[in-house]
Image 1: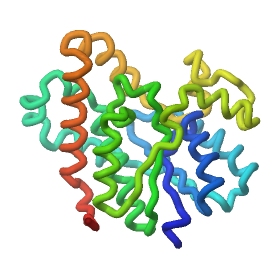
Image 2 (image 1 turned 180 degrees about the vertical axis):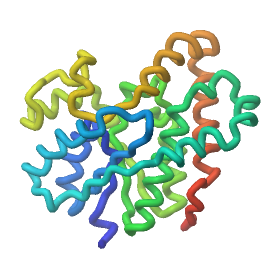
Image 3 (image 1 turned 90 degrees about the vertical axis):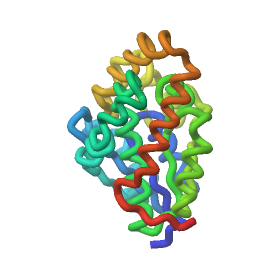
Length: 239
């Protein structure tokens, strides 16, 4: 396998990651679509809806499709130092989602190293960057630098696109123009997580109004970086 011709995409099956897959299919020879599963995930089968459409356009041989269970890793990231984290981060520790995201990125790197792949990307967009720190432009340089330690390039091709669903509709990949909004269409074709809804509700309605956006971002970045650097998978850095 030639890693320079392969790319890993953190794939939920939604419009953001599907547009990312569509764009990357024009740039790379092989696309590895990785969907991570855990006890909190819902609609995993829905992540295949747009994958089937991508296969019709580019051919099934263009893709490697993986659904990977990382439940035990997520729990290890979140619970292993729970008491110390509670003292250090306080109310922020409600952010189970960021332990999950750290586990996903560590798993991306593990998969990339095992398969000699040098490129990883996601469908992260600025539309969710208010409470999802891994999608924030402030955290991107840190995350990219972390991947680079393993000689992997991480990038986010659709970060500045708010309505990826409208672009997919214009390209003929989806039948409904508005699948991001209203929210009732959101889960029809992608994997999701019930923790995510609680995460957004808590931070938008409680934590950020109480502590402010700046403290939230600083705390979230410190927490995520700490969990990444714990290296729970014993990954061997290249640089």
